[in-house]
Structure formats: structure tokens, C-alpha cells
Length: 102
Image (cartoon, rainbow, N blue to C red; front, side, top):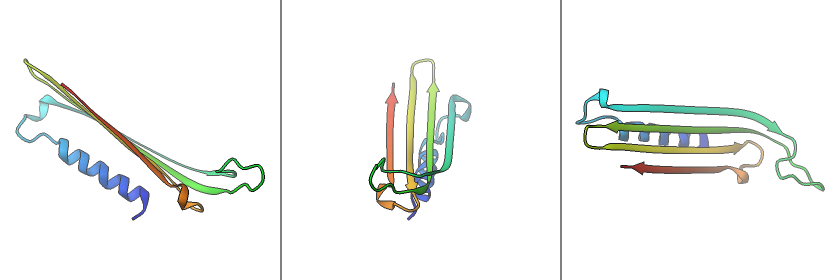
């Protein structure tokens, strides 16, 4: 499965998981952000002797969700990203992080 599709599916799962269920919608604050970059690198391995070039795509998706009540505050942060190299797929990578605060 292409990296970009994997990242899009993961972001969709995060949105569904954090959708307000029993809590009223006005109490949740969602701040999604998605960045997509495409480009070309003429020396992706930074090699002096044998430079390799490739087109690439980078996707970075973030979601901040918070809920405040009279008694508590809950915050959830999730981020996933990755870079896909068209001509050098062995350099494809994904990264992610998550945090919960209460």
C-alpha cells in the first residue's frame, strides 16, 4: 500500500476515534492540520561519488483535540507523517507521535 494512502487511512482512524460520542459536540475542540509537499531532490543520499535523484512527496497530518469541563481538562495530540521517494523506495519513511494530557 502506498505510504500516502497509509497515512491518510491512519488520519481517518484518528478522527473517528476522537469524534465526540457521549460528550456534547460543543465541549470538544478539534484542530486538524494536513501538509503535503512534493519536490525533486538531485542528491537524496548526499553522496559526492554517486548522487541519486528522485521525486518525493511528504505528508504531515496533525490533530489536537481538547475537552474542558468544570472539573477537568483533557487534551490529545496525534501526529503522523512520512516521505515517499519515487525512485528510491528504500528511503521511504514514516514517523509519528502522540500525547495525552489530563
